[in-house]
Length: 119
Image (cartoon, rainbow, N blue to C red; front, top):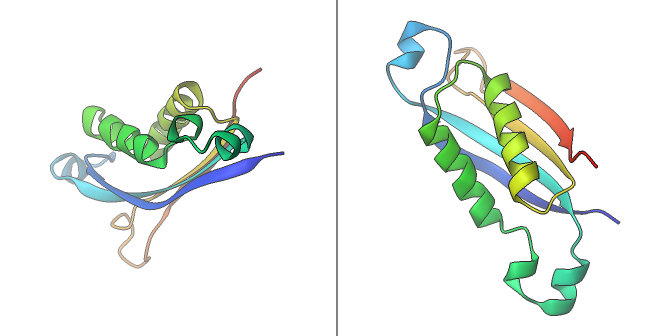
């Protein structure tokens, strides 16, 4: 059985991009995160210590984005997927990053990756 914890439209303002103008000012990124886990223990204990805390995952994403500067969304996504899989009790993460200011004619553009914990 796989249960899911999700985060939708987590906004982080950060420096990211390959162009000089992108390296001068922060721009918004939006994160959608799906994390597969097992709710059985938490459902029995009713204890927050037995769940994947979406507030802690959100704070970790924000902290990483504020502390790290990369050029590519792909690099950032790989870094964050590795962090989530190693620091939280999840077996799989699907991470979508949207960059709404990248293409003026589009509402948003972005990437999505799916990574599984190695056994």
